[in-house]
View 1: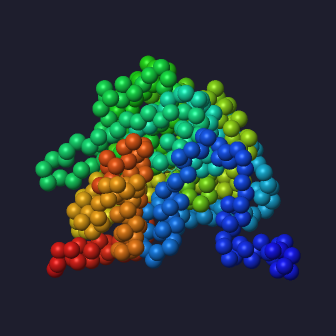
View 2: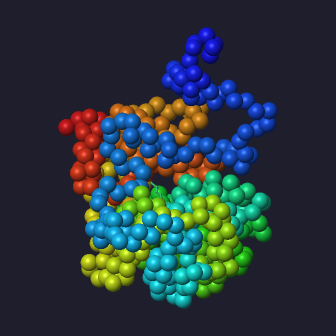
View 3: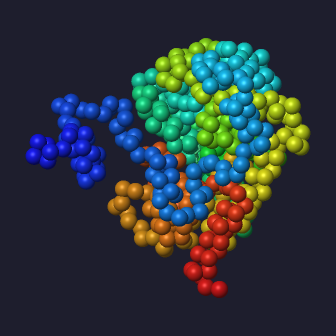
Length: 455
Ligand code: IK2
């Protein structure tokens, strides 16, 4: 065929690729043994891959994935520009493997105060490629075949695949909603753990619990008593805690962010995870960190040095400068952390009104920039297919993107495989968006309501 066509090998493949897609070539590649590693079984689907693609395919207002369409603060932007365009040409090269010196130094200073610990920048801080890599290092370094890891549902979706890829077994425990008072909207604080149920999940095989406060997708900010209960169980059963605190500055209505590592007995068994993407509204920089005792972090360093080696130097330098600025303004009205929370609380309250106007029942988040809402009243728009493998909320959102031009994220994505359908009457919206974006969403929701109910 190749000889008859008179084409070179390259031209021949290019023509086949264009005609039939590259998959034609890949499908021809057969091996006599399984190609995929067993630990990846069942983990190929990813809600972000799927819904980010849909959001880009349709002309829709995007309240889906959690990234700001607002500019980052000037001081952070300027720090990045200076890092890339300034005189220090070494900022274009590798830096220290476990974290750029300027960044680990300021992180140790900043968080040492908040955690009530003297932090050694060299041994108690590890800079990672976003909080994603921080989580990956925790699971790979500390979870073994046969270990159980407790996940609190709803949870940030990657915890389950990361636990499984490490050979661990996820064990689920649910935050359960308590009825709100008559005529009142539910708050994320109305969702609580049943203490007896949580205690029953701790067994001899439990290696770690993952705590995410403020919680994505619910926006729950765990109260001190709830944290103390979890901490006591960790100490009693000698269990580690991976504390994902990427939304630590986004707390509303005077609520307090408690750092579980600061509770008695917890420093030695906790890894605290943060993200510059969430802290300075710069998700594309992909700078994250872990804080913890050396006897835990040294194992994370082994994963990190053999996986990504280190994170982009210029981005680390910019985050260091941004933290220095925040340290100088800490707790003052012009602190970015203070201003961001105020701005987000306002946007949260706008979105609550828009969702109500659209016929949904929002659950008011006490933190983060996400809001879950019950869309049951709009369900009649999309037929229920009880035999469908895809949860209803996922099908509903796909319909909403195509027909109403509005993107959200299915809440079933934040539940473990056995429980995905229990909460598929809820969808998640992101409100770290420009006023114009929120206004466009508001218009869609109000128009939709009018179409359903008439003027
Ligand atoms: N941990 C949590 C709880 C997160 O929410 C994220 C980022 N998620 O944002 C996507 C979304 O929910 O819409 C991470 C970790 C990862 O953070 P980073 O971007 O720093 O890797």
